[in-house]
Image 1 (cartoon, helix red, strand yellow):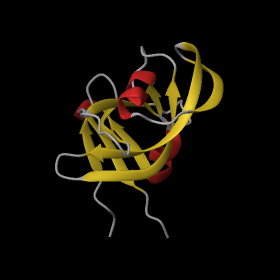
Image 2: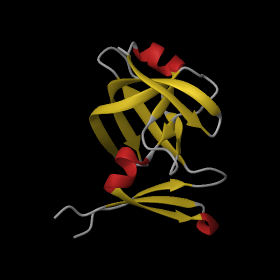
Image 3: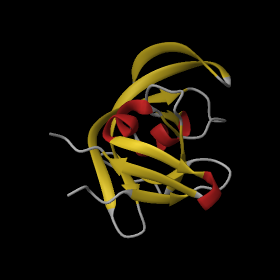
Image 4: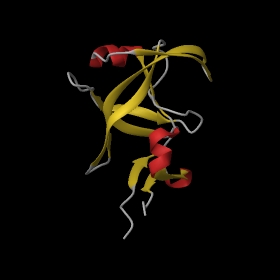
Length: 133
C-alpha cells in the first residue's frame, strides 16, 4: 500500500514548513523554499548561529543570487504536514555566509525520497514518498 503523501499549500512559491534541531536548540517553524536547482540544503548563517552549530569550511559556490562561501554542518530537520511529521536525523546541510537568502531545500534528500508533484491550479505541492523495494 502506498504511503500517504505530504500535501502543502502552494501559492506563489513552493514552500515547505520545517524546523531545524541541534543538540542545543530548535528553530521556530520556517517556510523553506523547495529548490530543484540546488543539490543540497542551504541555510543562512544566522540560523546556524542560533542553533550553535559547529561549522566546517566547504568552499565557494555560484548561486542564482551570486557567489557565496559555504560551510557545512550536521543537524536534524523535521518537515511538518497538518497532522504528522517527517524527520531527517544527522543530515548534512550547508551554511551560507549570506543572510539575505531563504532556507533552500535542494534535491538531497527531498527529491531522492519523494516524487514531487506541483498542482499549481489546485494550489498544492505534494511530496509522494517513493516506495523502497
